[in-house]
Length: 170
Image (cartoon, rainbow, N blue to C red; front, side, top):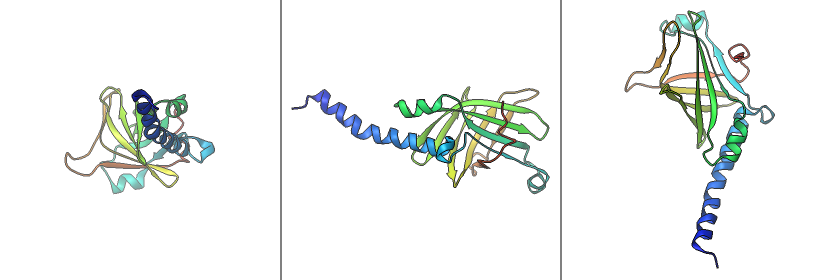
């Protein structure tokens, strides 16, 4: 006969293990190349997009998983993994922020360090869609702020798996 501790441990395994496996699988499909994912997703904007949206101040945006995170997702009950967000403005100013993401169903919910805001990563075929209401990154010569209207729609960026230039972050 199982003790209370045994029953509790079995219940944790029954409910937590599938969620951890699902999170690891989503991470593998998204960020591990052999699973047809990509370590980095990015996008560059140019004159055509700037003419359609004159308020767009971004030249490029990219998000990539940080090294050593695969084992974190597979072996951790928290299922958190690290990301790096890199943004270059039309003026040529570069901004970077580190954060953590956690799978939540079919999406990743991400939070940037130092109250830099949060965003969601949603798979869109082989690409990712980044949605946010607020991202703020300290930098020089000024801070970067990507915000949406208080009650308006989120800001959305489609990031491509094969975006070599914005993903050259080293």
